Image (cartoon, rainbow, N blue to C red):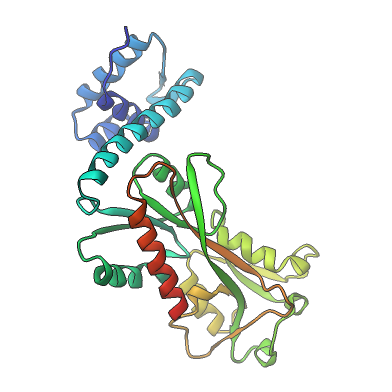
Amino acid sequence: MLNFTLTDLKYLLALAEEKHFAKAAARCFVSQPTLSIAIKKLEENLEICIFERENHQILLTPAGNVLIEQARKILSEAQQMREIAIGYQNPYSQPLRIGAILTIGPYLFPSLVRDTIKAAPDLKLILEEGFTSTLTAKLLGGELDAIILATPVTESELEQTEFFQDELSLICSSKHKLATQAKISPKLLNDETLLILGNGNCLRDQVLQACKNVATTNNISNQIISSSIETIKYMVEMNIGISILPKIAQINLPPDLVVKPFSGNKKPARTLSIVTRKNFPRKALVKLIEEQLIAQLIRS
């Protein structure tokens, strides 16, 4: 007969993610022997080996990988039960946990907090920034209530609402030759040094897509990688190269930096959306956040 608790599953997930007994125990605020005994009893109960323990390494077995995914679903559903109960009692009794990708959070979160304090003073927000994959995993696992992305989601448990077309524009130094152009054709980017974000950032892919007419023919002379849009702004102002900037990030621009729209009827843009779980019980609060974001973007 199966006999395990949600706490056992939390220990299981912690060890699977940390791959280290001491770190997993610290994360769960228990002693290492407590966690080790719980994992061993769980394996005995399920009559299966979940972890390989060799040379101080913790590896998941093939069966362990499948069980870990099931554990995530069970814990997520348990969290949903708790949220449903809270939602019916008082939707404001728990903070709303919102994540956003790194190229959105810094530009939307400050005004969102200010506007939410005015519109719903009883609602507390907990904000987090990260990469799309990390935020999506936390949303699915119940660690976040909603996330703001610039790419589509494919997980059937999630629903996505688009709320803004974030147009991409070229930025260059006022001393750069492109500064005299009213509009920019991608072909004008031939032989330019392009400043872009690093791998793992969806804006990098969207920028390269906007430049595809030249990028596919290898006419861009050089690419400089940065981890921050703000760093790119100042490097562009120093005329080190050019870059492409989303509309929401076109604030607090350095004085010698200019913004130029692209030519053509269909301007390159990324689609901003808010994503939550389909069965999330406090959707009215997520709708409130969406309305605050739209109002903020209209003002800007």
